[in-house]
Image 1: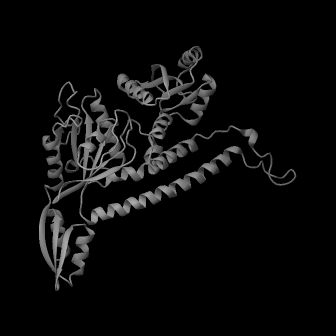
Image 2: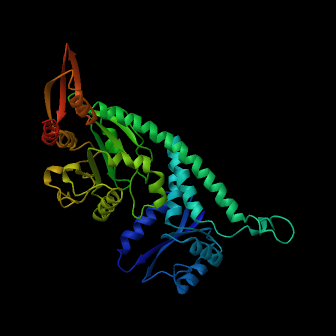
Image 3: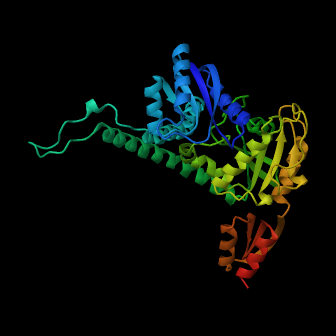
Length: 414
């Protein structure tokens, strides 16, 4: 489809960053044939059309002259603004959320991914219902002249969408319950979780694949991974599970955050978050800031430096290697420069993950009497027990815990 891309820049924003990022998003859909892209600088948005009348006339002329079939607008349009633009320009209009949903729809492959994308589409579609198709409305309800106007088409559409949303949420809830069971088994075995996060196309899936065991699909394109992938790594005494998740972008649509909540919550319960940064990208600083802002929105405390490390990826194609952290609170021992594609710097990263996961943990054996059930219950609830062995009236426990957990245990049973 012949497409015209418009990036909306407000005076406080970086022009090139916004333009290039949205152009990459548009280019990631192979069905689109982009004719041109332009930048519009605004001081404020118009409530009816979002852009000014002068810009509107110029765009209308370009659309008609070049027979444009689709207009992409890098902003979050209200339903009224989108409808007004389509009527005025006589062309299909997609805002930023609509484009991202189209990309996610083309990437989803697993049943869980398809459910999450469909839920996001329906939530977005529900907010976009306007009074059209009024000729399908029932004329009147009841008898005679006293009946009401009957059910309008928009009310019928809302009811159908609401029903679909409820059914999909039930299906996603089943997936979430299954994930909770799997998570409880991991926690029971006291195996820590490491989550890879980063801006889309930063190289998370490529890094995931250099770890032993199963692989996931890695491509040089935006949002190649929608579903969380897990696999066990590390040594027998220092095991951990790594998780590859969906990439972040600027202005991540709210409907996507809601739909992918079951996936993103894996990040929130992680023992260690590995922030993968493409240092070859000229906008690496801004992309890193977007990632940390998104983590904050998910309720993750980025100020806890013991929980986050940075992986500066693609140093093989970077003009200059960067060793200063993007998160200012991080120290140099939490920064790892690698090339996942060329497999450079990986040994230090593997060691760094294990050190950061286990540096405060110690393995200790204790013996409890069979009657000390409250202590046993406390230790198992905190998932501190690695192994246990019953010998007559005594239980030998192999624990993995840190000083804080050990102190809390002592204080609880003085």
